[in-house]
Length: 216
Image 1 (tube, rainbow, N blue to C red):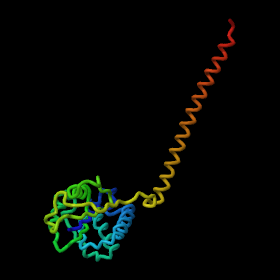
Image 2 (image 1 turned 135 degrees about the vertical axis):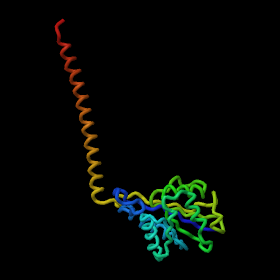
Image 3 (image 1 turned 30 degrees about the vertical axis):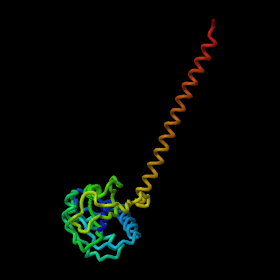
Image 4 (image 1 turned 90 degrees about the horizontal axis):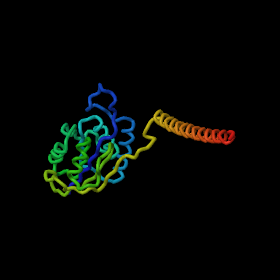
């Protein structure tokens, strides 16, 4: 049996068009996500033999966070060019090339490649891997070269929780402001509707009263 842990990198900065895709780093939310997920993985008390990461900065930063949490030397992280912008077949080739002396591997990659690989190896369980998520797979294979279609079993799936604490004070203030504006708008709509209804009722009563006092 081999164990493969697939990790999708966390949220990253993509607002600056001058930064190449491969060089885009984790943003504030991504750093929170990575810390949270690395902690959850450490609680499983699994000791990986190898960490393999895409060369993209956001994937490398995710891998380093796991390595630090697991007390694994950062220089031992193996970087693979083929994992960046990789399709399922590209990632599978990296898996097939792993040394059979290695039993447990953590692979840090990108969507949609990592999700497609997951669907290829296991039968259902996870529709899509969100940013920062990890899955633990037990593979029915003695050699990495024989890892193939539906030979895996999903043992664990974890994804970051959405928390307001993941966002800065500016986001929290603007969110509160937007919520307040929405409540004011709803109140104004209700008030205007009430005034229109009262106006119609008043007109009906007024004209009804006037018609009742007209001479025969």
